Image (cartoon, rainbow, N blue to C red; front, side):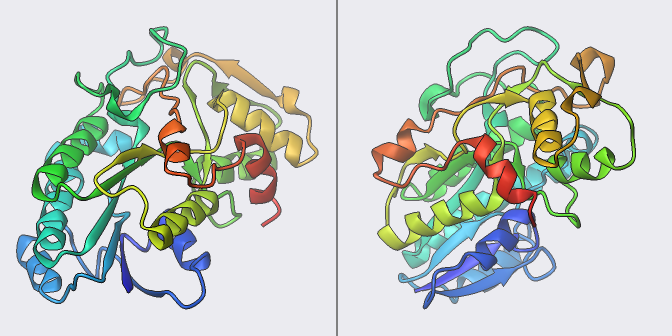
Length: 291
C-alpha cells in the first residue's frame, strides 16, 4: 500500500506525516507538486495509481474570507478538484478519503442565534451553507461521491496545531497572549476545536483498518465551545489570567464571509465504525501548547 497525501503542505498534511504508522509508505503532494484542479495534471498522476493505493485528500481552499472574493478559485479547488481525484481513484480501484468541513451545514450565520443546540449528524445537509467556502466544500462532497461512490468523506471542525510557528487560531492566541493586555474574541459561534495530530492519528486508524468505505463520517475532538472559550483555555493552559479574554459578538467584528452560529459535529458515525474516539477538546489544547 502507498498512501498519497494531497495538500501535504497544510497543517493536517504535516500532522499526517509526523504521525505515520511504521512501515506504511507515504508520498506527500503539495499544491506545487499536484494542482488538484488541473484536469491534465490529475489524469497524468492518476494513471500511476493502483488498486492497493490510498489517497488522503487534504488539499482545499480554506481561506474563508478570500473565498467570498474568489468564488471561482475556491470552487476549482474545493469542488472540481475532489471530483477529478475521485475519477482517478474509481478508475484505478484505489481508495479515496476526502477531508471536508463543518461549514457545509445550512444553519444561520452568527450573530443570528442558532436554531439548534444538538450536534449535526452526517446526513443533515440539504440547504445552502451561508458561505462560499461552505457551499464549495459541499459541492465537492457531492461531485466526489458521483465520481467515486466508494469514497469516504471525513468532516472535521476548527482545526488547529497550536505551535509557535503555526498560524491557526490557537497559535494566534498563544502569540497575542504575550503581546496584549486584553483580547476581545467572538463568543456567539459554537464548534468543536480539533487538534490536527489527533485527527491525523484517527485517519491513519481508518486507513489501516479499511473502515468507512462509501461513508460520510464526522471526526472531531469531543465537546464544544466558542472561539472565546477556546481562547480562554489557551490562556489557562499557559498559566495566564483568562479574564484578560473578553467576549464579544460576531457583529462587533464583521468579516467578509458569514460564519455558522452553530456547527458542532456529532461523532457518533465515527464511533459506529469502531474507530477510537478523539479525546475531549479541552484535553488536547494542553498538549498542543507544550510544543
